[in-house]
Amino acid sequence: MKQFTSVQDISDVAALVQEALEIKAQPLTFQDLGRNKTLGLVFMNPSLRTRLSTQIAAQNLGMQVLVVNADKDSWAMEFQDGAVMDGGTVEHIKDAAPVLGSYCDIIGVRCFPGLQSRDADYSEHIMQQFIRYTGKPYVSLESATLHPLQSLADCITIQEHRGARRPKVVLAWAPHIKPIPQPVANSFSEWMLRSDVDFVITHPEGYELDPKFTGNATIEYDRQKALQGADFVYVKNWSSYRDYGKVLCTDSNWMLTEQHLRDAPNARVMHCLPLRRNVELSDEILDGPRSLVQQQAANRVFAAQAVLRRMLS
Ligand code: CP
Image 1 (tube, helix red, strand yellow):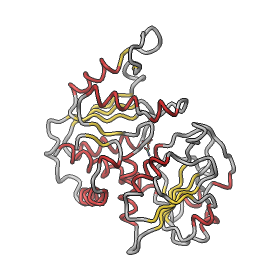
Image 2 (cartoon, rainbow, N blue to C red):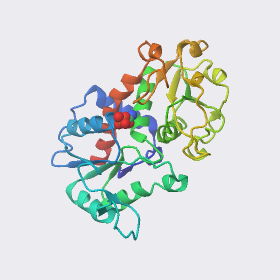
Image 3 (cartoon, rainbow, N blue to C red):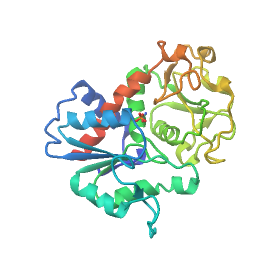
Protein backbone atom coordinates (compact mmCIF):
# COMPACT_ATOMS: atom_id res chain seq x y z
CA MET A 1 0.00 0.00 0.00
CA LYS A 2 1.43 3.37 -1.06
CA GLN A 3 -1.34 5.64 0.15
CA PHE A 4 -3.98 5.63 2.89
CA THR A 5 -6.22 8.64 2.48
CA SER A 6 -9.68 7.09 2.20
CA VAL A 7 -11.57 3.80 2.20
CA GLN A 8 -10.98 3.85 -1.57
CA ASP A 9 -7.38 2.86 -0.86
CA ILE A 10 -8.60 -0.43 0.67
CA SER A 11 -9.97 -3.30 -1.39
CA ASP A 12 -11.45 -5.27 1.54
CA VAL A 13 -12.38 -3.46 4.77
CA ALA A 14 -13.22 -6.67 6.64
CA ALA A 15 -9.78 -8.12 5.84
CA LEU A 16 -7.97 -5.02 7.13
CA VAL A 17 -10.08 -5.06 10.32
CA GLN A 18 -9.16 -8.72 10.80
CA GLU A 19 -5.47 -7.90 10.33
CA ALA A 20 -5.75 -5.16 12.95
CA LEU A 21 -7.38 -7.57 15.42
CA GLU A 22 -4.56 -10.06 14.87
CA ILE A 23 -2.03 -7.29 15.51
CA LYS A 24 -3.92 -6.31 18.66
CA ALA A 25 -3.59 -9.88 19.95
CA GLN A 26 0.20 -9.81 19.36
CA PRO A 27 1.34 -6.21 18.79
CA LEU A 28 5.09 -6.89 18.76
CA THR A 29 5.14 -9.72 16.22
CA PHE A 30 6.50 -7.53 13.39
CA GLN A 31 9.11 -5.58 15.33
CA ASP A 32 11.75 -6.15 12.65
CA LEU A 33 9.62 -4.95 9.75
CA GLY A 34 10.30 -1.27 10.35
CA ARG A 35 13.93 -1.51 11.38
CA ASN A 36 15.99 1.33 9.85
CA LYS A 37 12.80 2.96 8.55
CA THR A 38 11.57 6.39 9.59
CA LEU A 39 8.01 7.67 9.85
CA GLY A 40 7.62 11.45 9.60
CA LEU A 41 4.47 12.94 11.16
CA VAL A 42 3.50 16.52 10.31
CA PHE A 43 0.77 18.15 12.39
CA MET A 44 -0.71 21.37 11.09
CA ASN A 45 -3.42 21.12 13.77
CA PRO A 46 -3.58 19.80 17.36
CA SER A 47 -3.90 16.12 18.19
CA LEU A 48 -3.72 13.79 21.18
CA ARG A 49 -4.90 10.38 19.95
CA THR A 50 -3.65 10.43 16.35
CA ARG A 51 -0.25 11.72 17.35
CA LEU A 52 0.39 9.22 20.14
CA SER A 53 -1.32 6.15 18.68
CA THR A 54 0.54 6.49 15.38
CA GLN A 55 3.84 6.86 17.21
CA ILE A 56 3.13 3.75 19.31
CA ALA A 57 2.10 1.82 16.20
CA ALA A 58 5.35 2.77 14.44
CA GLN A 59 7.43 1.87 17.49
CA ASN A 60 5.67 -1.51 17.72
CA LEU A 61 6.87 -2.12 14.16
CA GLY A 62 10.43 -1.09 15.02
CA MET A 63 10.31 2.26 13.18
CA GLN A 64 11.82 5.54 14.22
CA VAL A 65 9.43 8.48 14.36
CA LEU A 66 9.97 12.19 13.67
CA VAL A 67 7.19 14.60 14.63
CA VAL A 68 6.88 18.18 13.36
CA ASN A 69 4.29 20.68 14.54
CA ALA A 70 4.09 22.90 11.47
CA ASP A 71 3.87 26.62 12.17
CA LYS A 72 5.05 26.01 15.76
CA ASP A 73 8.40 24.24 15.68
CA SER A 74 8.94 24.50 11.91
CA TRP A 75 8.40 27.32 9.37
CA ALA A 76 4.97 28.52 8.30
CA MET A 77 4.28 26.84 4.95
CA GLU A 78 2.94 28.32 1.72
CA PHE A 79 0.71 26.11 -0.48
CA GLN A 80 -0.32 28.48 -3.26
CA ASP A 81 1.36 27.95 -6.62
CA GLY A 82 3.17 31.07 -7.84
CA ALA A 83 2.75 32.87 -4.52
CA VAL A 84 4.80 36.03 -3.97
CA MET A 85 5.93 35.13 -0.47
CA ASP A 86 6.14 38.57 1.05
CA GLY A 87 3.67 37.78 3.85
CA GLY A 88 3.58 35.45 6.85
CA THR A 89 4.57 32.20 5.16
CA VAL A 90 8.27 31.41 5.15
CA GLU A 91 8.72 28.17 3.19
CA HIS A 92 6.90 26.77 0.17
CA ILE A 93 5.57 23.20 0.25
CA LYS A 94 7.56 22.61 -2.97
CA ASP A 95 10.76 23.17 -0.98
CA ALA A 96 9.78 21.71 2.40
CA ALA A 97 8.08 18.49 1.27
CA PRO A 98 11.06 17.03 -0.66
CA VAL A 99 13.18 17.61 2.45
CA LEU A 100 10.72 15.57 4.50
CA GLY A 101 10.71 12.95 1.76
CA SER A 102 14.50 12.67 1.86
CA TYR A 103 14.50 12.13 5.64
CA CYS A 104 11.55 9.72 5.91
CA ASP A 105 10.29 6.47 4.39
CA ILE A 106 6.60 7.13 5.12
CA ILE A 107 4.93 10.52 5.66
CA GLY A 108 1.78 11.23 7.68
CA VAL A 109 0.09 14.63 7.69
CA ARG A 110 -2.81 16.19 9.59
CA CYS A 111 -4.28 19.15 7.72
CA PHE A 112 -7.73 20.38 8.74
CA PRO A 113 -9.96 22.41 6.39
CA GLY A 114 -10.17 26.19 6.66
CA LEU A 115 -14.03 26.05 6.49
CA GLN A 116 -13.97 29.25 4.38
CA SER A 117 -14.20 27.77 0.88
CA ARG A 118 -15.88 24.41 0.25
CA ASP A 119 -14.23 24.06 -3.14
CA ALA A 120 -10.78 24.72 -1.71
CA ASP A 121 -11.24 22.35 1.22
CA TYR A 122 -12.84 19.56 -0.81
CA SER A 123 -10.05 19.74 -3.42
CA GLU A 124 -7.68 18.48 -0.68
CA HIS A 125 -5.05 20.83 -2.09
CA ILE A 126 -2.76 20.66 0.95
CA MET A 127 -2.81 16.87 1.22
CA GLN A 128 -2.30 16.48 -2.53
CA GLN A 129 0.75 18.73 -2.44
CA PHE A 130 2.32 16.75 0.39
CA ILE A 131 1.71 13.52 -1.56
CA ARG A 132 3.12 15.02 -4.75
CA TYR A 133 6.21 16.73 -3.39
CA THR A 134 7.34 14.27 -0.69
CA GLY A 135 7.19 11.40 -3.19
CA LYS A 136 6.86 8.88 -0.36
CA PRO A 137 4.06 6.57 0.85
CA TYR A 138 1.48 8.74 2.57
CA VAL A 139 -0.90 8.15 5.46
CA SER A 140 -3.60 10.68 6.27
CA LEU A 141 -3.70 11.71 9.90
CA GLU A 142 -6.98 13.53 9.03
CA SER A 143 -7.40 15.70 5.98
CA ALA A 144 -9.85 18.43 5.00
CA THR A 145 -12.56 15.89 4.19
CA LEU A 146 -11.69 12.48 5.70
CA HIS A 147 -10.23 10.77 8.78
CA PRO A 148 -9.58 7.18 7.66
CA LEU A 149 -7.42 6.02 10.60
CA GLN A 150 -10.27 7.00 12.93
CA SER A 151 -12.80 5.15 10.79
CA LEU A 152 -10.67 2.02 10.70
CA ALA A 153 -10.44 2.11 14.52
CA ASP A 154 -14.23 2.55 14.61
CA CYS A 155 -14.70 -0.49 12.37
CA ILE A 156 -12.39 -2.54 14.62
CA THR A 157 -14.43 -1.45 17.66
CA ILE A 158 -17.74 -2.35 16.03
CA GLN A 159 -16.36 -5.73 14.98
CA GLU A 160 -15.29 -6.44 18.57
CA HIS A 161 -18.67 -5.51 20.06
CA ARG A 162 -21.18 -6.67 17.46
CA GLY A 163 -23.36 -9.72 18.01
CA ALA A 164 -24.20 -12.46 15.56
CA ARG A 165 -26.75 -10.47 13.56
CA ARG A 166 -26.07 -7.61 11.15
CA PRO A 167 -25.96 -4.51 13.38
CA LYS A 168 -27.83 -1.26 12.93
CA VAL A 169 -25.39 1.65 13.10
CA VAL A 170 -26.66 5.23 13.46
CA LEU A 171 -24.54 8.32 12.86
CA ALA A 172 -26.23 10.98 15.02
CA TRP A 173 -25.47 14.69 14.71
CA ALA A 174 -24.94 16.52 18.03
CA PRO A 175 -24.60 20.22 18.87
CA HIS A 176 -21.32 22.07 19.38
CA ILE A 177 -20.38 25.59 20.39
CA LYS A 178 -18.45 26.33 17.18
CA PRO A 179 -18.23 25.20 13.54
CA ILE A 180 -16.57 21.79 13.30
CA PRO A 181 -15.37 20.25 10.00
CA GLN A 182 -17.01 17.20 8.39
CA PRO A 183 -14.13 14.67 7.98
CA VAL A 184 -15.04 12.24 10.78
CA ALA A 185 -18.68 12.06 9.66
CA ASN A 186 -17.76 11.80 5.95
CA SER A 187 -15.22 9.12 6.65
CA PHE A 188 -17.38 7.08 9.02
CA SER A 189 -20.12 7.12 6.38
CA GLU A 190 -17.96 5.80 3.58
CA TRP A 191 -16.46 3.07 5.79
CA MET A 192 -19.91 2.00 7.04
CA LEU A 193 -21.14 1.77 3.45
CA ARG A 194 -18.34 -0.74 2.83
CA SER A 195 -19.13 -2.74 6.01
CA ASP A 196 -21.66 -5.43 6.85
CA VAL A 197 -24.07 -3.12 8.72
CA ASP A 198 -27.37 -1.31 8.24
CA PHE A 199 -26.41 2.37 8.25
CA VAL A 200 -28.65 5.35 9.08
CA ILE A 201 -27.69 9.03 9.42
CA THR A 202 -29.77 11.42 11.51
CA HIS A 203 -29.33 15.19 11.71
CA PRO A 204 -31.35 18.41 11.53
CA GLU A 205 -32.27 19.55 8.02
CA GLY A 206 -29.42 21.47 6.41
CA TYR A 207 -26.70 19.17 7.75
CA GLU A 208 -26.69 16.75 4.81
CA LEU A 209 -23.14 15.58 4.15
CA ASP A 210 -21.50 15.42 0.73
CA PRO A 211 -23.40 12.65 -1.09
CA LYS A 212 -20.06 11.51 -2.50
CA PHE A 213 -19.42 10.02 0.96
CA THR A 214 -22.94 9.10 2.13
CA GLY A 215 -24.00 7.36 -1.10
CA ASN A 216 -27.26 5.48 -0.59
CA ALA A 217 -27.21 5.64 3.22
CA THR A 218 -30.64 6.18 4.82
CA ILE A 219 -31.08 9.76 6.07
CA GLU A 220 -33.75 10.09 8.78
CA TYR A 221 -34.46 13.57 10.15
CA ASP A 222 -36.56 12.14 13.01
CA ARG A 223 -33.84 11.12 15.44
CA GLN A 224 -36.11 9.00 17.67
CA LYS A 225 -37.15 6.98 14.63
CA ALA A 226 -33.53 6.62 13.53
CA LEU A 227 -32.44 5.38 16.95
CA GLN A 228 -35.08 2.63 17.21
CA GLY A 229 -33.33 -0.71 17.66
CA ALA A 230 -29.85 0.75 17.12
CA ASP A 231 -26.89 -1.39 18.10
CA PHE A 232 -24.31 1.39 17.74
CA VAL A 233 -24.87 5.14 17.89
CA TYR A 234 -21.95 7.24 16.65
CA VAL A 235 -22.36 10.77 18.00
CA LYS A 236 -20.62 13.60 16.18
CA ASN A 237 -21.02 17.26 15.42
CA TRP A 238 -20.30 18.72 12.02
CA SER A 239 -21.00 22.08 10.43
CA SER A 240 -23.17 22.42 7.35
CA TYR A 241 -21.83 21.20 4.01
CA ARG A 242 -24.63 22.98 2.10
CA ASP A 243 -24.20 26.35 3.88
CA TYR A 244 -20.54 25.62 4.10
CA GLY A 245 -19.03 25.84 7.57
CA LYS A 246 -22.17 27.37 9.12
CA VAL A 247 -23.83 26.37 12.40
CA LEU A 248 -27.55 26.06 11.55
CA CYS A 249 -28.84 24.41 14.73
CA THR A 250 -28.07 24.98 18.39
CA ASP A 251 -30.97 22.94 19.81
CA SER A 252 -29.53 21.27 22.92
CA ASN A 253 -32.10 18.46 22.61
CA TRP A 254 -29.83 17.01 19.90
CA MET A 255 -27.31 16.17 22.65
CA LEU A 256 -27.69 12.41 23.16
CA THR A 257 -28.89 11.35 26.63
CA GLU A 258 -30.07 8.06 28.14
CA GLN A 259 -33.66 9.15 27.62
CA HIS A 260 -33.16 9.33 23.86
CA LEU A 261 -32.02 5.70 23.88
CA ARG A 262 -35.23 4.31 25.39
CA ASP A 263 -36.01 2.50 22.11
CA ALA A 264 -32.43 1.23 21.76
CA PRO A 265 -31.84 -0.56 25.06
CA ASN A 266 -28.72 -2.38 23.88
CA ALA A 267 -27.11 0.47 21.95
CA ARG A 268 -23.43 1.16 22.48
CA VAL A 269 -22.38 4.76 22.04
CA MET A 270 -19.32 5.92 20.11
CA HIS A 271 -17.46 9.20 19.61
CA CYS A 272 -14.00 9.80 18.16
CA LEU A 273 -12.98 12.28 20.93
CA PRO A 274 -12.21 14.98 21.82
CA LEU A 275 -15.72 15.94 22.84
CA ARG A 276 -17.47 18.57 24.89
CA ARG A 277 -19.24 16.81 27.75
CA ASN A 278 -22.87 17.75 28.30
CA VAL A 279 -22.91 19.61 24.97
CA GLU A 280 -22.46 16.71 22.52
CA LEU A 281 -22.96 13.77 24.89
CA SER A 282 -24.14 13.50 28.49
CA ASP A 283 -21.98 12.44 31.43
CA GLU A 284 -24.42 9.61 32.17
CA ILE A 285 -23.69 8.00 28.81
CA LEU A 286 -19.97 8.68 28.76
CA ASP A 287 -19.45 7.34 32.28
CA GLY A 288 -21.88 4.45 31.86
CA PRO A 289 -21.72 0.95 30.37
CA ARG A 290 -22.89 1.99 26.88
CA SER A 291 -19.81 4.04 26.12
CA LEU A 292 -17.18 2.70 23.72
CA VAL A 293 -15.15 5.89 23.42
CA GLN A 294 -12.10 4.59 25.28
CA GLN A 295 -12.13 1.34 23.30
CA GLN A 296 -12.19 3.38 20.07
CA ALA A 297 -9.23 5.48 21.22
CA ALA A 298 -7.28 2.36 22.23
CA ASN A 299 -7.93 0.79 18.84
CA ARG A 300 -6.33 3.76 17.10
CA VAL A 301 -2.96 2.06 17.77
CA PHE A 302 -3.95 -1.11 15.93
CA ALA A 303 -5.58 0.75 13.07
CA ALA A 304 -2.38 2.69 12.48
CA GLN A 305 -0.27 -0.44 12.93
CA ALA A 306 -2.28 -2.41 10.37
CA VAL A 307 -1.88 0.40 7.82
CA LEU A 308 1.84 0.94 8.47
CA ARG A 309 2.47 -2.79 8.32
CA ARG A 310 0.89 -2.96 4.86
CA MET A 311 3.00 0.03 3.75
CA LEU A 312 6.21 -1.52 5.06
CA SER A 313 5.37 -4.86 3.48
N1 CP B 1 -9.96 11.37 17.28
C1 CP B 1 -8.84 12.06 17.01
O1 CP B 1 -8.39 12.14 15.87
O2 CP B 1 -8.26 12.61 18.11
P1 CP B 1 -7.06 13.67 18.05
O3 CP B 1 -7.60 14.92 17.37
O4 CP B 1 -6.71 13.92 19.49
O5 CP B 1 -5.93 13.10 17.27
